[in-house]
Every structure is written in C-alpha cells, then in structure tokens.
Length: 396
Image (cartoon, rainbow, N blue to C red; front, side, top):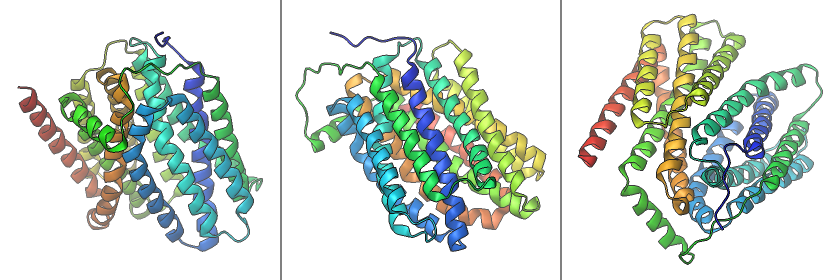
C-alpha cells in the first residue's frame, strides 16, 4: 500500500520549531554562563570544534541509515537520545563550578542526534506532503524556525534579567523542548514505503548514493550552491559583531538588532515562498543570491550602521528563499530511496566547509574590517558565475 500524502502535517511542522527554540535558548544560556564563569570564550571554541567534527562524521553516515531504516523511528530515537542527554548532563553539571566534561558530552550527544534526525525528517516530507504543497510546507517550516531564532534571545534575556535560571535550568528547558518534539514526531502517522531491493551494506550504499547524485547535475548544483552560500553566511555572521565593536561603539543592543533583522528577513523570505504557488526554479536561486551579493558589496563600500541593518534584512531574506527553494528542489529531483543520502551529502557540504570559512574569514575580517563584506559579495558573484557556467556545460 502506498504512503498517503496530504497538503499539510501539523506535528511535522511544529516538532522542529519546538526543538529549535529549546536548542537556541540553551545555546544562549551556554554562551552567557560559560563566558561568565571562565572569563573567556576558549571553552566555547573547543565545544564548537568538537561539535563540528561530530556533525561531519554524522553527515557522512546518516544517509545510509536514513535510506535503509524506518525514518520515523530514526527521528524519534534521535529526539529521545537528546532528551536523555539533556537531563543526564543537567544532573551531572554543577552550575556553580562549570566544567568541560558535561558540556562536551552533551554537545556530542546533541550533534549525533541532529546529524541523523535532520536528514530523516527532511526525507519524510515527500512521503507525507503532496508535491503541490511541498514548497509551501517548507516555507512555513523555515519561517517558524526563524521565528524561534528571534524568540529565543528575547526569552533568554528575560530569564537572565529575572535571575530565574542557571545553566542547569537552561539544560532542563532544552530537554523539555526535545521531549515535546519527540511527542510530536511520535504522533505522526507514517508508514515506511516498501522497497524492492535488498538492504545494502554501508560502503555499497554510500557509493551508490554518491554515484546517483553525481549523475544528476541539478542535485550537484544545489549541493555546491548550498556549500558556497553557507560558508559566506558564516563569514557575514563574523563581520557583524566585529563591525559593532570597532565601528559602532561596541553597543550589544546594536548587535542584537542586526541578528534580529537577519531573522526577520528570513521570515519574510519564508512568507514570500509560502504565497508563491509556482514550482521552484533554479534560476530564481541565482537571482536571489545575486541580490544578496550586491547588497553585501554596498554595505562594504558604505560603512553606515543603518545600511548594514538594511543589508542584514536583505541577506536574511535572500538566504531564506534560497534555502527553502533548494530543499524543495532536492526533494522533487531525488527518488525517495535516495533522499537520506542526498540530504546527508548536502549537509556534509555545508558542515564540512563552514568551519574552514569561519577560520579563514576570521583573519580576513581582522585585516579588512568592513571591507570584508565587499570580498564576500564578490566571491559570491564569482562563485555563482562559475557554478552556472559549469552546469550549462554539463547539460549542454
């Protein structure tokens, strides 16, 4: 019997919003309490580096698991693992004497869960949502995630101001969000599609998935564009706090406004695609990313806070439109039995190169300051030109 699809699925929509809200709230508390306890950001850097390594290897293997096992069970198991990890590390952690052990352990647990739950959840969408409703669903889902990114700092700031919670409290909140997400995923009526072929081994499954993707230029183009824009997105996120500290008086409120407008731009991008009933086209991705590149060049040439604020909104808008459209195109172009491996490769491209970009642009920003935005914009334009030329040559 075939999988029944609908135009909408409320539990699948709410689950990532709830878990994202809890995770962002936890990271807000983590950054604050760790720096407060240690006086520097060294421990945070170690935690992020370890998390990046875990995500890299998780992305490498997750596609095989997602394509060979029941996707709902994978997501539910990952969310339950995160619940247990948060509660166990909350019990282990001493809020008065914060140490690396519980925080690094929790980072490993959460990133293992994320590496498997995210591609499994994305791969479930074509099996739950109709083709006509897919872009709208992805747009609403991304909009809610951007909303979570706005709400979490506001909630976290209020909790810190009222002195209601220590770091253990933020851990419990995160565990509670994963528990709610777990229940949402558990309530989804999902039946694993029947497969004609036998289950492949890990190596054979990986090689088959990579060959499948490489033979389809549209998928390769999406992967390369995703890697490029996410590296440059991380670079933009580095420039924003640098500019505020060196050009705009070090006012933390101004930095918060930039992040908020970036997220608001993402919400507007999601709303745009929610109302757009046309099927996604690759040419639209190029137009949106070109607009983002031009906006960055303008901000780099004109060092003005209000210009930077407006450009942050434009960049968030364009980035959101690309991300939603890229996910929808990927779901439309990929056969169901390869969706897990396809998303694994896509997230691998993003997670593998983003830390390298952050490292390189950390030094470039110290050297060029606001001019780094010009470099980012020009690199984006050059990258778009090269990728489009390669694609046209491949299909021509």
